[in-house]
Length: 318
Image (cartoon, rainbow, N blue to C red; front, side):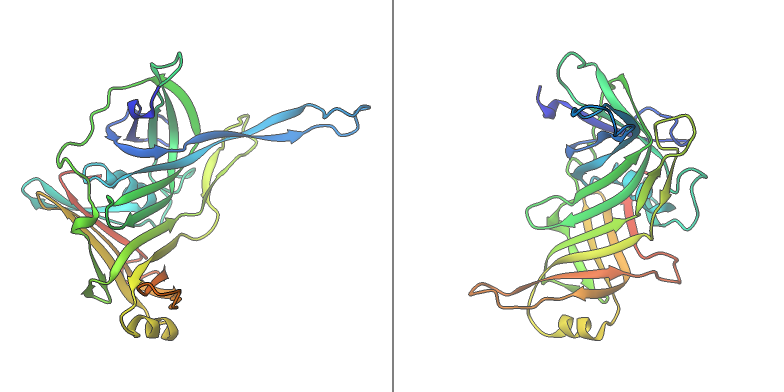
């Protein structure tokens, strides 16, 4: 059966890896959550030429969700990847959710807020069953803004366990009808609005890994950080003058942000307050218009204890 008949749901867990029912549903572009089983050998000298039987080891569940950022549900993923949300009521049933990096562990076995993900993959004889992933941690998040595209989210997930449940009935967001998109995007560099940025991508990586232990189980026992959280910005801008090249050679820091809006005052602001250019390869590749594919590294801002701030104004809190 066709993938268009499937659905993806998400619910916030109260206890890590204790599955909950989906509370929100996502109209996704694609998903790639898979289960892998590590293997190990138990014998080498076997008196024959045929490969000996091996054994099954640790089970791991991970993959990506790709979807358009919608005001009603994107906050789950922003909270999941960053860890902290400060909510301000704006009146008129609107709230500003300010997401920043967590500086403490969410729990002894997991660093970040935990979620359950339901993925219904239609087909075969199990059309009434959905995959349910529990103990999900948001490892990576990409926010991409480009012409003729929605604000595209790619969320990299790690789960503790997988089981099957009876599929639920999805209710997709309908207010607003459309997700955030490129046509309301504006970019600021060093506090000033610019019009020469043609594409903007933010990549955030928590560097998480599932850790198996000797606990009478083949599933990972905990999820830990295996390195620092990394914030990177990349994009394409038109080459107009030497300003950004001089910022690159001087290694000066400045803020960069992108803001998108939607009807009814919904908005999302993504800001990296301390960013430094790590690559600015200005060249003449041929007769075409000159553009530069730049990359930047986000650094911790001591006053806010975060390298990235995402403010989501919508009718929900997360």
